Image 1: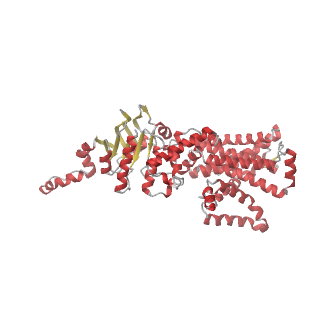
Image 2: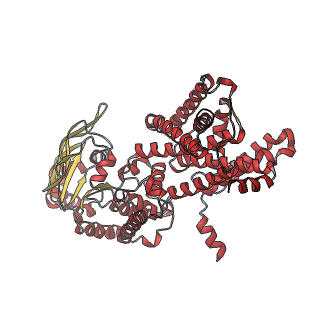
Length: 293
Length: 273
């Protein structure tokens, strides 16, 4: 089985393979942030910190413990989720801008800790060996992305997801309907952190090298950009946003030095003409129905 | 038997005493109204009952159990639900989703339930919540709008949707904060019938309302607040005749002159709403 898959993967152009892996990881990261910011309405500017916790956990689990990749990724997600719950409990009492600043500060702390830990090789970064897995990494990434899409869509259309959206819309009304706001916020933060952790673990193994500085403020903003571009709260939106923004630097490559300029311009343009994001306010089921009739 | 009991409840915001030493008993199965001029503390009492503010002093008990200082979501789970003076719907969500969120305490499956979407026990719960939601939407005649966005509904329908959402909690006590505000006379009549039906279903109703026709025609008992204190309580007839109430609403009578005394019958009828 493993060898067949290896052979199939070997036939794909490595450049496109790498891009598809990047897209898959970006989808997982974006979906995680979409649960926190899109569904629950809590602006987090520290998503990359959870990604780095997952990345370092997963890298160390491979290097020091030699754990199989699937266990390794779950561990990365779990440790990241536990950190998310721990930090979420006190700071999720804050609203809006204050929460955003706190998550930003938390992300900086995590970065500085990793930059100074002997265990993570300080500022030199860690070189990550290939994962212990019979299934090739790209397929693991695609499967994980698919699972994340399914899980987050299930969450969105459940009693749990409705409680999260109620908190986004009106906290006082949500509370008056018997929703324990603090608990749901912490849960949503932990889910977001779990997905970021898994995404980070995949990122570490796909790149083969991680450095704490890779997971700074800009990375968090990148992920936030994906979900805003796609439309906050929309799952197809997160997928499209992640795909577009993680490949934009590639398809704009022909513009050489101007590409970041064009990239920024595109974002501004989009926010003017579709302020709710590409898929904001679009109901996929309705869309399909209207196409059919 | 009193379902809800407030005893000597006071709340202070800094130097302002918003509610002072209010004692109130709401009997099971009754429609009880709170009236009073603007700023009298009516909505504050709702916020005290639902735990949005803890009282500075005094006790609040529901079904014989003290609820003062309990978090809002737990009070809701005990069976007290409410509507808001300025409508607070989940306006980006559909009409049905709003009522389903109202039914939150009727379900129990959280994250694990969400991830096991197709498990029969989760599906059963979801189906039951949907049935409950649709029955509440039928009660307020909004079932045909279930899929619409709640923010797009006209004002009167938004008010009714709030009631449906509050009823989805299957409350024992329903608090209605100015339910008739901004409604036209026909809508008000329909609303009165609806509140009667809700009471007939066994729900106790406590309401705040400025429309006197509405309050007098519907309530079993009326409590009158002025400057945070309860100045009178009784059935509609007693309240109509109470001089303190008339004074709170219309001000003190001018010293009688002959001309003024000629006008008394007119003035009297004016305060008889």
